[in-house]
Image 1 (cartoon, one colour):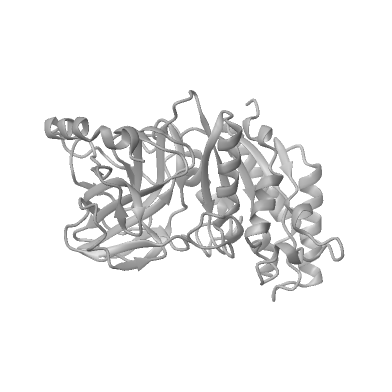
Image 2 (tube, rainbow, N blue to C red):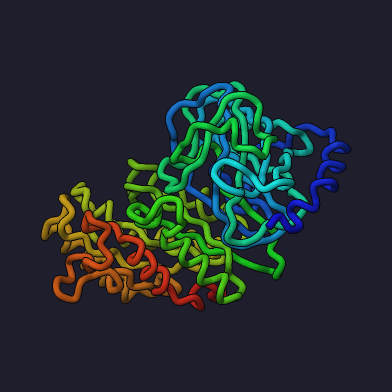
Length: 406
């Protein structure tokens, strides 16, 4: 189904032929809402950026991402947030996937930056592409192809994609065949957000902000069964004003301290407040702070949660807090960590700092041992839900809580 996305190819080609201006300036990766780092429209896909190995000169990437809300004027945000030198990208294209690395005929079209086919993103910065004419469907595999002609130093991306993408050498990004994309990668490189203009104005999005459970670990890879994916399907079926979903989970991430990715408090601006069209953030984090035995107390986490809520509210964004799920049986569990978790959850359930609370602990826990995850939902390590557990989390979110008046 290429739809309007494919039919606008000739229009896009004419526009690109006429354009001759230089690349638009890139914005800092931590730029606040309202800066040039924030695109118009609504975020339809996102993944939190982190340092991702070393850049490779001449490397091509064919990256597969899943849209949540459909719309027109597609824009992609490219990131060099953790680079220590400028990053040049060329041959950047966007198309719709047919199968594997192959694209649907007529769907692969060039992206531009201020009319130019090449963009150089400064160290620590991001750059949005120009809007691409035509429509892209909801719930479809969008493929962003790019090449890094002179990449070196720290690369930026998202390590645990739970999705197979492709790499190759040579200038093949414009091709719709997958013949030259023979290697695979389980990460997303140099992209961290995609936005569209929804058909139904004004439209809106929700950001799922969390750790490995939100990132999808123990869900089936390649099938989009993370709980934010399930939530996106619920929102699409409901047909309400909020349909975009951005998954900003990082495996191992903490609220208060850097480690596996920047702490939630540090990445809030980039991963939530700078995303276009965000109405609400679902905050589901804290288990890694608790189980790490770093001395973090419930009071410490409460202070962090309140700071997140304050900053989100100041940006006009609603906050739904989720209770911390059970993890007895995980190697780092002990009664002291469990006591902190219980105290944190008592605060969350009774707090007025948030616009709503979703009790993920109540959803996941076993009625026979509430400190453990229900065996039906256990992905096998006693912390991460399996596909059915992911479904249960998504089903527990009250959809009307995602469009609160603020």
